Length: 270
Length: 284
Image (cartoon, rainbow over all chains, first blue to last red; front, side, top):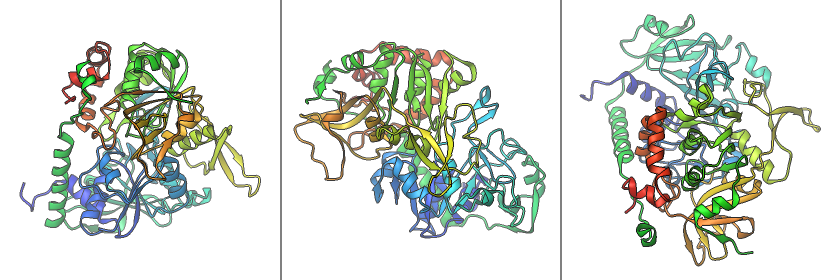
């Protein structure tokens, strides 16, 4: 692929990375959020403080972790704190600027489902569950959500409300006393959705080059409103693309590396 | 009191009974796979598994019919997708129905802390902003702060009958050193009645920093030296996480017959964990 051509997935990761301001303290979910946060750190935001729920604070991994607790995160961290501490002393205490999440389902108010599709007791699909997301969504000063947009994932009604966005909108979240500010943006493979300041309903605020509002609406399970001014986002710069592709190539090599464990002779001969 | 160091098969046989609650902790790091495989070989039944991230280790125990109950807070294959054996048990009751107790990570950490502190519950702020406290598997209740009137969530303490950890080192006195990501391992251990540990190696003296995570011998019930005992997860300073294995597990665990065949060949038919590592070509 030439440097000028890029995929919509790359555009999504680059756009997600651009949302992060240098120096922010960021609580990172695994997968797309982790890729976006590390791309930001490797490009315009070298002083991002990345915190993973495994308790690694200020981590600067050279390759993307597959799990939330790969050794790479520990080795490059400023410190490692026990798990009860990362949730109580950092997140609950209000020390996190940005929470970065993904989900299986999002609704028009940015509420997230990662628990079940179908009924809780007799689910059609049992999803992994809550993890750290409910508290991240509650306490982070602001939340960014990154996920691919389809009518199955951007739904009229969640099967289960795992992590709160703006609940039913129009101040419902504030009325419950949630300390954090809620989702500032939902970054998808079509563009960016942002909450309306009054109703707090997600609106299409920005598009990737060549994407039409009709295409985004067709990928959304509710009648998606358009923001009053619809921005077209610049494509990835050559620097952003090169950083992302290098990061992904390094990661792929690292994850394929064979593990060798040397056993003491007694164990080998047993 | 000196910690008894036993072969792993004897350690599990001596301390774990059918129907008990057993926490296998280690947050992505230091997951006690060797101990879990020994539990499978000894065909323990109706266990109540407790693990924040069930991971492949609980997927295997559940699929092999060892578990009747699971207390957890995130049940996926990290970075890969589903735990198919966990899903099969929840969605279709195979090989047996699995009763769930489900928390968030923060809640489950509080539950282990409460258990380790001899408290009936731990408390957190409560905002009634999710379905999590309302679903049938949640045991979280609300109360109000006697000082401020603020709504709080009460999370019932977790006190496992047995907690099993993997760690890097044990010294001659039986003190255990954990280095790297510790998760809620310490809290899960101190909450349990019986603490079993597998370690990479035994050393004369632990050379640890003053603030290192050490479980002193007086809280350890029994231990076993099992090099590679956390594989395919990892032991910081000894070997890395086998991310390729975790990716490959998706295909193995997806169907019942491929899963059973893999477990038969790699767990039931080998004598111990070194046998698995040799069979997979991981042992050098």
